Image 1: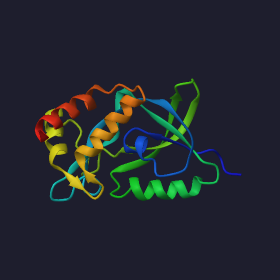
Image 2: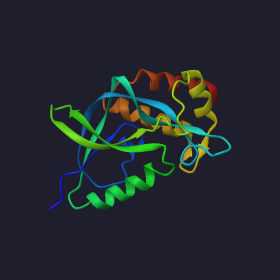
Image 3: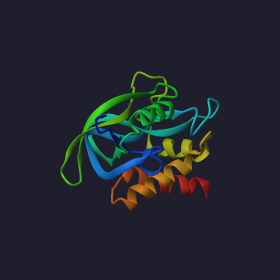
Length: 177
């Protein structure tokens, strides 16, 4: 019998996990911050016009997201799917984080964090600069702005506040008209 596999989602995994889920619950990862600190050359941009995607970056902060318990029997297939999706350019590092669920459980969950030494890392961009990039970029999975809008909307639906994402939505909508 395989051990229970938990996955922590903080961006598109929240609304598009891509694997069978047995349970989902809001959870918090301490010591991390969700930010558009990774240039996207595949899913939400191209090498010629890079987009931005969310990553977990180390910080004296926390990130609220969703802990997913993978459906029993789907653990190995889920790892393959996640690695193909998230490790496409090796800008993410696979990591196991301690997360606390909304009902108080402490779990160890698989997640993907930014490699600050990777060429795609771009931490420290202003929200205005992020908005200009997100408004224009488009990649294999569609416009960068759709990724922002979907993530912000689902966070709101879950009762998770993220002021930076809310501000980015406003800025991108202003740019796009």
